[in-house]
Length: 142
Image (tube, rainbow, N blue to C red; front, side, top):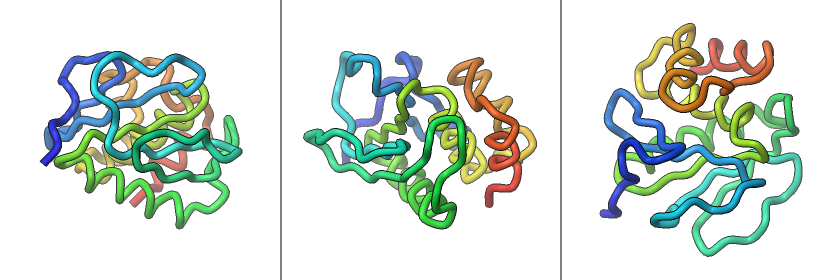
């Protein structure tokens, strides 16, 4: 079993179940502390190579995933792995796509879809989930 992130650390979202997931913007330096064991990168282009296991979802900035079925599968994997691994979700800035993904994880964790964006804005970043279609994606996520 891998040690989870530290609760209260910068960018770390605690889901209602206690799972911890770090959200991050890839344009900023890697935060201090342990590296993730698994990362889900939400970018319009292939992410840079890193030392930990990753999964890439093609997701253009300010939009929605190119393949919503693949995105849902990747989000479920991230949520499952967050039970006992250090999981990171990241996009370029760390707010729109990352916030949308974190809100979907909150839905998987039992937060009603219509409350998930507010949950992530309160517990992760007030700027999370940037567009109306990203909010709609979360409310319809199952």
